[in-house]
Structure formats: structure tokens, C-alpha cells
Length: 130
Image (cartoon, rainbow, N blue to C red):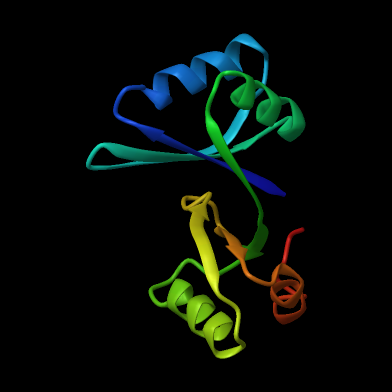
């Protein structure tokens, strides 16, 4: 699975613009995360049609970064995310982004983009979804 990250400044309203743009082109948003830091913001998305979404966002003038992510099934309990982060760190894998997906499901998923997704898939072969 790939995640699109959009970097923007305060002159744009990426939430309104991006959601409208994708809806108008029938690209479904599967997961979204937005953060504003001073005059800069970033918006991360997983969409139904990655290639089309990437093309539309680039054509609209956004700075888009693509991240290949690994989905890991985890337990819904305190410390589960800490264990994932620690295991990756101990195995020399740097985390670029980590997002809890489906937090209200019986089996939560963690979407993680790293310096070595192949190694993550090896470490979590029994828990990786993709």
C-alpha cells in the first residue's frame, strides 16, 4: 500500500481543496491524517486509486511525497505501538511515519513507512497485511 503525503503552506487550505479535488474525480479517501505546524502543514492520505490520486494532486500544484507502507495487525492494548517501535529500532529500521488505522476495529492496524519495508515484512511476517 502506498501513502501520499502533501506538504503545504498557509496560503492553501489542503483539507478542503484535496478532499474536493479527489471527490470530484471519484477517488475515494481510505485514510487521512492532517497536521498544521505554524505556517506549514502536511496531509497524509491513502486513496482507492493511488496513481490517479498522485496525478491529480501533482497537476493541482501540490508537493506530493509517496511512501510505501506496511500494514501490521496489532493488539488493542496499551504498549502495543511501543513494542512495534522498539522492535523496529532494535532491528535497525528507521520509522518515517506511523499511523494507527481502524482504531475502533477488533484488530487495529498500524500503517508504517520505514527505511526498510522488506525487513519490516520479515519481522512481522505473521502480522503484516500487505
